[in-house]
Length: 401
Image (tube, rainbow, N blue to C red):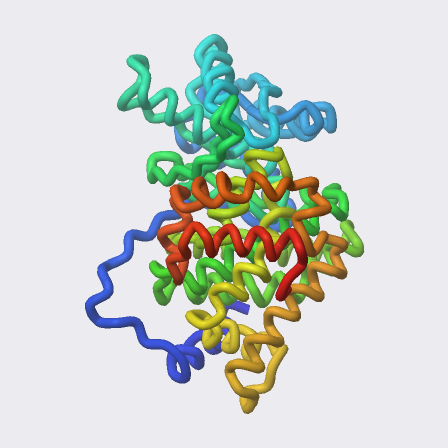
């Protein structure tokens, strides 16, 4: 599979895009160790022990704690000689206040490491707790090893240097990039993901697709991230619907685990774009699922970026077989966007934000916040406030998408 992707990417380089020679060098970050594949969770205790761990705080939500998965990890840790405690403070759209609650539990329990169990909310909470610790008098130089055990296939928070936090009381999401929060170990076991319900499978899978498409078209893309984004897009288009239709399809689950990880490698080291800059405001203000909002907005933002990115969309269409190599770039790009819409429909994701009970009177405020979002600056085009309002309005009224 990797060899096939490399051959495809070499073909793209030959036919499509050569990066300018004055492009600044890239700094590439990812976890020092990744466990991925069926049954890899069984290795988590042994591998974490290699870091000299004595006692870990497992942070998760009440559902995963009650499911027995947190206890399973505790057993793996115990077998490796690691003590642990479980903290169920994780909530959707985490805040620094929740991170402080986790840090208090961490210190009171005498732990020396963190394990986040869940999706993006769990991993982002752990990262925020590390930042709070770094900024405290207790541990500005503290080394707190972090193992991120992933249960979804979308956010890639288990392996990235980025985390998203909601400002309490303001309903405003802030995305933060800090290389100190890259987990020491990422764990992606598809057997853990078979229990994901179809709606969550769809939302997280389309989140991964959005990551890959935005990384492939953003300002700071490079050869490495393009290859990874391309691989993620191919895998999502091939396997997301299978995972959605049959959650116990372990092959589809494993391919989606690889896809979201590849997408994470791409966006964590290249950046994202306007979809995320806008979706952060919607999910923060209305407490909406991040993946769903991304999926709704993606085609509308692709239409806005079309004149700058249509050659990239066309290449993606041709590589994935959506378009033929003899087809024009414009037509190929249109077919690629239509494929995204068709997949969204098959996954029963809405095609507009009106059904999410969004209010038009908030568009101006959200547009201003989107322009201040870190993802805004890496979009291939720089929209005005009025253009962002228009995209929100188009997504509300189902115009041109």
